[in-house]
Structure formats: C-alpha cells, structure tokens
Image (cartoon, rainbow, N blue to C red):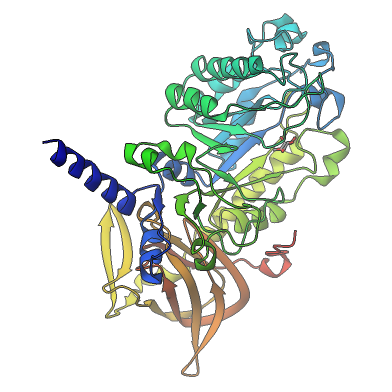
Length: 509
Ligand code: FUL
C-alpha cells in the first residue's frame, strides 16, 4: 500500500513537473525539442491572466510629497502639510475610466512613511493632518469611487519607510504586515499590491531585511485574487520607467530555485520561485537564455511610466505633460509589446487630476478608438484565403488559429477588392495556452512578388508593429517560427496617418 502511495506521489510529482501550469523544471539533458515543449507548456495563473487582460492600468502618486514639491520625502515632513482642498476621487476615477484605464493603484504609503489611511500602526498618517480634521481616509474615498465606476483598485505600500522608528528590526516586519492587513481588510476587494524595489536606510540609519514570504502570505490569505507586482511573484518590472518595453518580450523566464518539495505541493508555491538573472537585460527568455536555466516560470512584464516627468505633481511640470501622440507611442510600445501599461497621473495639491492631464488622456483614448475601430483585414465581408495548414479551435467562446501539425508555419492570406492603406499590424496569442510565437512577418503582393514590409519576434498577449505606409489589396501574415504550435487569437491591420511622427521603439531609452 505504502509502495502504491509513494508511486502515486512520484507520478504526481512527475506529471506536475512536466505539465506544471505556472512553472516547470528543466533537465540539463533536455533536447532542444524538449526544452521548447516545456517552455510552451508554462501558462499564466488565473490572476496573472486576468491582470494581463486589463492592458492599461493607472498609478496615482499622491501624498506628503504633493505638498512639499519633493519626489522622495525623508519622513520628517509635518503631517499638517497634507491638506487637499478640493479632493474628488470620483473625478480621478471618471477620467481614468473615460481614458480606458481598468485599475487604479494608490500610493497608500510612499517611502516617507506617511499613510493616507487612518492606520493604527503609526502616528504618521492622515489622522494628524488638517484634512477633514483628521477624520479623512483617501483609500476609502478611492475605494468607494472605484466601486461606483466599476474600476479595479490596487495599493502601493512602500516597504522602505523613512519614518518608522522600528525600521531595521524584526518589529518593522510586524508593523508592515499589520499595515498590509489594514489595507487589505477594510476596503473591499483589492486587485493589485505593488511593492517597490527601492530600499534605503530608515531614520536610524539601518537597513531592513524584509520578510517577503510573510508579506506574501498575508496578501494570499486576505486577497487571494490580487497580483503582487514588482517585488512580488506575479508581475515583474519591465526594467525601465520610460513606458517603452522590449521588442522581444517573453512572459516565460528562467528561474533557478525550483525546490522539488515545493513543486510537489502543486499549489501556488511560485511565490518562492523567484526568476533568475537580471530582469532588466535585453533578452529575458529567448531559447539561448532559457537553455541555461534550471526551470521556467510565467512572470509577465508591467511597464510603468508617468504622464509627467515626476511621479508626484509639480506645478512647474504643467508644460511637460505627455501629449496624446506620445501616449499613443507609449501604448504601442508597452501594451503593444506584451506588457501591461501602468500610467501614473498625479493629482494636484487641490486633490484633482489637472485639466491638461485630463485633456491629453481623453484625446489619447480617442486616437486609440479611431485607429483600432477599423480592422482593414475584414472589411466588406472579405475572408481569409483557405490554407491547408490553418485550423480553428475554440475555448471560452474565443476563436483561435493554429496549425494542424507542429513546427509548421501559420499563414493568413487575405485579399480585398479595394486597395487599402496600412502602417500598423496587430497580433495576439491565446496566452491562456502559453506564449509561443518567435518570429512573424507581414508581406504584401506587388506585381506578383511578395515583399516583406514588417517583421517581429515575440507576440504574447498583444503585439503592435508600425511600418512605413503601404497601399495594397493582397497581404500575407506569416507566423514563421513558434514553440511547438502557435495559438493566435487577434489579427488585424490598421492605419494611422501620424505613424511617421512617432518616435517608435528605441530600446536604448
Ligand atoms: C520608484 C519609486 O522610488 C518612485 O518614487 C516611484 O514610486 C516609482 C513608481 O517607483 O522606484
């Protein structure tokens, strides 16, 4: 009996490690084929998948810095400075909603340690401010507005705390867990918890050893559906704060501390599975990179950037708000590069989104709607040309294109009666079944000759590539190389007359 039980356990362990959802162990003896098959089998967790589908999320940097003009307070600023006179979280959420943002993350506590909710863990909070005579609670106000507008909500809670006396000792870990408990229990559903990487000294010159595992446990227990971002297991920082992601962006990346016992538990132990290597490097997941790894894990990129030069509001930056077209370029290079955009909009000292920011956000949304409202591929009832190798599958009501056999090219050929102008291609993979595409191309037929007008590497959830405008009525989109088989669920060609004006991708930024 014992033998059967241990055999079953072994079989489970084996199955789990081969078909593990979110992570997989590699063996040094894996052939190229096995490596690729394993990489293709790694999939997002439900919380990662739901998060990726949000596409555009928003950051709200607001706090004591808003009133001092600083970017990083040192924790000695007087709470009496915090006094927004016209604070209106409905206004924030309405504007965010109108611009297509799906989740808003509030800096409930930044590095200065000042808490925007009436915490019991420290005196350094809104309770000591003149705002609503110390009776205010910005997190509560925002949570209520989010509920009203059907907006998701997240909290930024800085582990680095330049005010807490206990910082640098075990007591601080306790305090931080209590802060987490407060923000995760009293405000309804929280969809994202954002931990920053900055870790300096506290007021007594000491550095803190963060007890990450215990923080993650609190979050998983109180808000099991929330993703934990950046210094967390679910979402990684793309590696720049410019809003421009990588041309080749893999969500399946190496991890080197897969512990057999933890895999055997088969649960969301990926919180112990930290990715290996520098996630800021140019290539995080191509075949060359994963070949050297001990294991692989699904760890997608979040691309954060501020609509202004600073994260907090500074009046003298009113002329430097990013234009609608700049935001469009950022959209192409973040969401369009298999990332989720996290766009910061800092409220003014009054407690409102500034009119310039509002205007640019709305115009940005109008631009996106006007471009992506018309897919040039499927106009006038024209259909894709039959291809012997292409088939369709369905999951959750979604149409997915794939090949009949493995390691074959997937070809979409399309001709329309009327020629059309295009300079944007958009593709998407059905990432619920993994990320697989390694190389694709757009070709047009001219005088009976196919010419390549755009190329790309990874696709992932969404990939947008711009190219010099062409006029055509016969195109071919070829998925040239994938891991095992591609699963494509979005395909389209679009046009924007201003493509040439965009800075476009520059990984150098
Ligand atoms: C950084 C912080 O130090 C900045 O102040 C800001 O909050 C940004 C989003 O993350 O690391």
